Image (cartoon, rainbow, N blue to C red; front, side, top):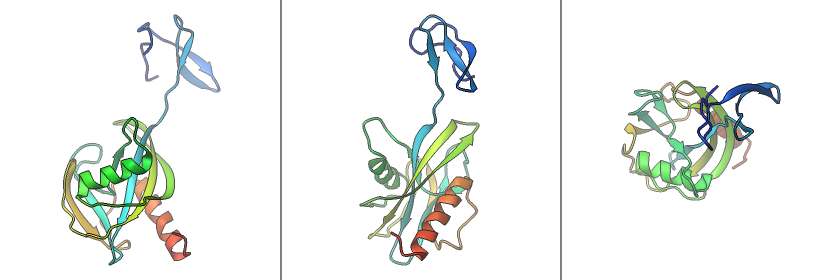
Length: 169
C-alpha cells in the first residue's frame, strides 16, 4: 500500500479490499486512496534521413542507458505540449504537430506505475545536443540503435515503424 496517511486529513490509513484490490482507506474521511499511474510522454523524433533521436539518461531510473526522449506531463499542460517541451529540454530539437503513436505502461521501482503516451514528430533542424537530464543525445537508424533501457520504448518504436510501413502517419 502506497499511502500510509490520508492526503486529505493526515489520518493513518487502513487496508480494505475494494474493487478486487487491496487499497488504502481513511477511516476519518471514509475515503479510498487510489493509486493511479503517473502520466508521461515519450517522443519518436525523426529527421529527413529517417534517423531517430535517442538520449543516454543522466538520471534514474535507467541512468547511463539509452531511451527515447520524454518525461512527466506538467499540470495545465497537454500531453502534446509536454512532448514538445521534453524533446526540446533533452535534445535541443524543436518539433511540431505531435502525432499519437500509442500508449503503454511501465512499472518501475523508482516512480511506481507509469503511463506513457507516445508521440512522433518530424524534425526539420537536426542540430541535436544533450540537455536537461540527458547525458548524451544522438541520431540512430530505427533498426540500428543501442539497446533501450525501457522495453515499453521499444514497443512504441515498433508500433511507429509498423504504422509507417503500412502508410499510416
